[in-house]
Structure formats: C-alpha cells, structure tokens
Length: 455
Image (cartoon, rainbow, N blue to C red):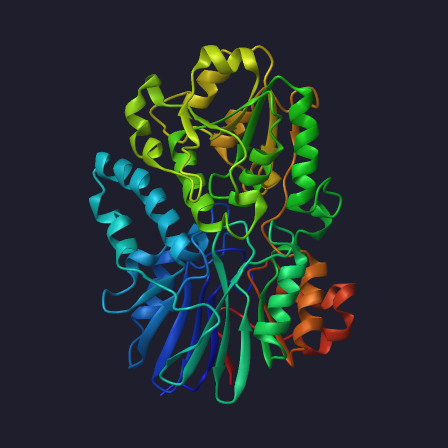
C-alpha cells in the first residue's frame, strides 16, 4: 500500500496538462485531468503516458473516489474521456453548461471527420456539479470544500482539502484582477480558507513576469476603460478574444459606445447568454447594457431560434437580434471575432466580413505568445492578424487569466502556509528567486512530476 500524500503526475514544471492526486490509505481523489497545451516542452510527458500512469499502474489497488475539475480549459479537462466510467466527475454548474456548448460544435466536426469515438458531449453529460458552495464532502477520509474563484474561465474553483489533521489549499488557476476584484478574493480567503498547512499553488506568471510587467493594462477594469477609449476613436472595431474569456467579453460589451452596434456570432452569443444568466445578480458588468446583434452564417435566421426565445430575468426582454450588414457597416460597430480553424477554408467567416470594411481596427485580447514568433505560435491567429500588426491597425489589450506575483504574495500572507508547493509553472525553482517571496523562501518545496509529498 502506498503512503498518504500529494502526487502531481504532471504539471510541476510546465503550464497545462495538469493531473494531481490526493491520497489517503487505499483511497484517492484526482484534481483535473488535462491535456498538454500546444507548444509544450519537448520533454513533457505525453498524454497517453499520463493516462497509463494514473489508471493502469500495476500492483496498486487504489480506489479513485472522484475527479474534481477546477475549470473547463482543455489543459485541465482535456483527457476526461479517458477516465473510467465508474469514477464520479465533478465540475461547476455554469462551467458544465459552457462545456456542453463548446462540445456541440466540436463534436459536429469530429462526427463529420469520422472520429465519433472522440465525442465530448456524452462525457460531459455524465459529470456531476459541485454541492452547495462553502460546505464540505468527505471522500473516505479526504474532506473537500470547493470555493468559486476568479479566473479567465467562468465558474472556476479552488479547494480546501483536509486529511490526517492537515489543511491544504489547492488553488487551481486563479487571479484577483477580474470582474469580482481583489476585495472579494481577499474576503473569501480570510473567511472561507484562513490559515493552512500546505499551499499548492499555480505559478504561471512567475515565469512570465518579465514579459507581463510592462503590460498597459493589468486588471479587467483597466481593460474596459482603455477599450472604451479605443472603441470611440474607430468606426470599425474587431476584437480577437477567446470566446470562453467571459470577463473580458463583458468588459468589451460594456465599453461599446451608445452609437455603435455590438456584434458576435451565434456561438459567442450563446456563451454570453449562459454568463449573463449565471452572474447578472452578482456583478454589474454581467448585466444587460445594449442589444447584442448576432452575425448569422448566410444571414439565415434559423441560427437565432433559441436566442430569440431567451428573456432577461426580471425584465422579460430579449437582448438578441440578427445583425444586418447594411445597418452596422454604416452605424459603426464592435465585433467579437474568432480565427478560422477549419482547414478546408483559406479564410474564415470573420475574415470574409472584414473584406467589406473600409479600415478595421483590431484589439488583440489574447496572450501574445500565440502571435508570430511567440512561445506557442498559433497558425490560425497568425493568419488572422496578417497585415494588421502595426500601431495604425491594432492594439494589444489583454489581462492575464492567472495570478500576478503580487497576488501570490498576498495569498501567502493571508494563509501563512507551512509548506508551499508550486505547480502550473514553467520554472518551479524560480519561486525561490522572487524577491517578493523572500519571507517564504524556506517554506517553498519544489517537487518533480510523479514525486510523492507525504502527509
């Protein structure tokens, strides 16, 4: 029988591809089961190997009581199809709704290309949602309390774990500069977490500190302020932003001038519908501001059926209408865009629409590592931005989905951990070199993939 403890199968020295085990006696829970990100290190453990190590290790009669997902990004949920059917999987309710929407379009492509065995929706439909927030559930001696946190993925979670008399905080991906803000983050940590024994924390921005410290905007609020200035100055505005980055999308939506139309495609509109329904009671930036015009393929209104049936709670008003090019091209607009990832077409629907524009101005609101020459150059994004990479035609306006080093320091101060285990970082050892962490240097414990930290 293997001893009790924490084992990070993958993710101690890379961003993404996360799989963590918390074990007590013959029982364990897993946190996340993610696929490697594009552009991962050449020596990174492959997805097939991590599945083998987690579920096919011989002479280890361990019982997996649950897999807990922090959020819906692929580097945290991407290997969910490989989890045995008898193991319960948990995720947030809104996160599951977003995953279902993402899966519908992805599964359509897989079915059309003869890969039905890779369908995602049947797996997502089996997922359970977390129990009442702030309450605990016991998994054979491992007590788990899920806490909703701020991240670029809506409805993300961190966990307080209790076993063998120890209290552990597993952060997952988090930040404190999104729409909820740093005050809500600090209050949650003080009231729901408190002092802990072991902090297992993401450290994405530790290895990106130099490239991000001079970023023109650092919070979603600052992004919205600057976006408002840009959108007033240009007649034709195109925003390249991840459709799942709802905080930024809602900031852009609220920054649209009154005299301009806000445009998105049916997929983006449906994600906004989920987000507004889930959060309008709690955050002003998730409330309806102005009509959302939907760019339907071929100008066919059949793409609008479910959207036209939606009503904003309490007002019974439908915020969606079909976009008409003859109206928005004259009026001026702000258009959410997506790069073309269908290899059958040289040009995507958004690029085709841009041909009808006189002088489009692009706000690039994604990690700059995806651009040409970046750490994880994305061909689809490179193609989309071709011809616009100059000050006359574009501005980078992006905030990280991850905690800045200042936020990590704040978390350490609030929880006063005896041990700090870095993960989800390209250089865990760099934690000891961060000047802000000097009071905690002796507590930072760097482990390797597969290494057991005993509890």
